[in-house]
Image 1 (cartoon, one colour):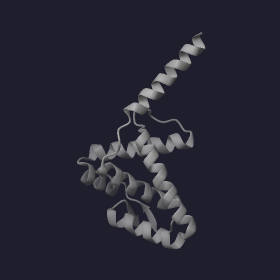
Image 2 (cartoon, one colour):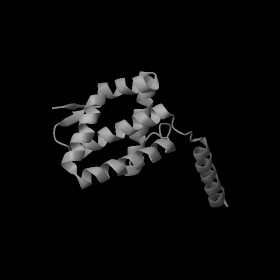
Image 3 (cartoon, rainbow, N blue to C red):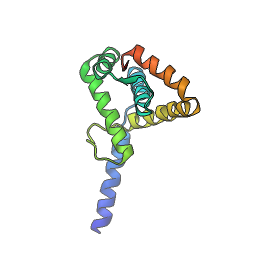
Length: 137
């Protein structure tokens, strides 16, 4: 009986968490798309690009209205990565809508990087530099 009760409690938490998920605002979706794209460029080791953390927070602050909002989105993206990789993460920072949107963007960008690595690295990398998320080295 305890097992059934625990299963019901867990199911209720999952359902309530899903119901709580709010759609991303346009600004959040834009920043997340740009953040994920830049992360893919660095993650795929596109030559000549590295992360610009301060630039990323500044871009997020411009789009979202404050550095705190930018950091919250960066933290949500980090939690999504950890959840995807099966690592421990702060459930208070996890947002299912961020996980879903980031998954779609990363799949699209990685497909482009696989199809034409040289061109995609240059296109995505240069766009991320222009936005301030990456810098050239």
